[in-house]
Image (tube, rainbow, N blue to C red; front, side, top):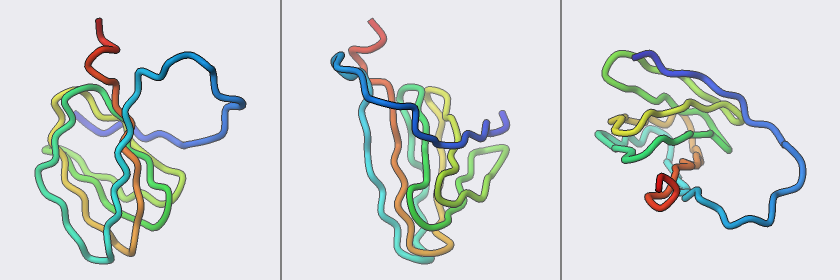
Length: 98
């Protein structure tokens, strides 16, 4: 399935409710490749700094700061940094699906 592109933007003040999202920061040096990563739950990957390419079985996307993609639960993906990059993966936590 093709990747769905997203654009990060500020949406105002955060809510005080308990978060049901987990976040993982990824720092990749220029030229680094991360193969066969998997998201267990629905997730969004957003590039914070730099430029990288994300690939799934049937699509890939070149992303720069402020751009991202949505990943369905169970998606296996790979990353390649075109330059030093930082990305954040936001995913629903297990307890959020109950």
